[in-house]
Length: 140
Image 1 (tube, rainbow, N blue to C red):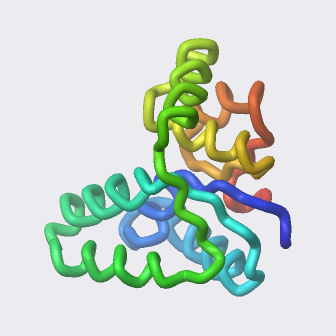
Image 2 (tube, rainbow, N blue to C red):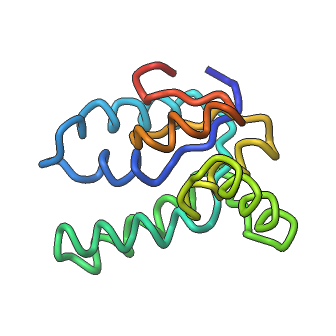
C-alpha cells in the first residue's frame, strides 16, 4: 500500500503492548506499512501519547524513550507540528464532530494530507468518518 496514512497512537500503543488484545495484529500492520514505505503523517503529539502510555503500562521509562528514538528514525514517518492553523482546524473538527481534543488533532492531520486515518478507537473511527476515510489496522 502506498496511500498516505495517519496512524493514531492507539495502534502504536497496542502494537507495543504484547499483553493487550489485538497486539499481534497491530504489530503486523505496522511492520507491513513500514516495509511498504507508505507515507505516514503523524502529529508530534503521538510521541508524547505513546511514550507516556508505554512507560506507565510497562513501568519502563528507558524502553519507552528508546522506542521514541527508534520511531523518530523511520524515514517515511512525517511528524507534523501542531501549529496555529492546524490547532484551529482540529478545534473546529472537535466541536463539530464531538471528538476528544487529541483525536481531533489526528483527524486534522489526516485531512490536511489527504490521508486515511487508522485507529483502534471506535468512537474516533465513528465520528471522524464524516471528515476523512477511517480504517481499522486490519482493513488497510
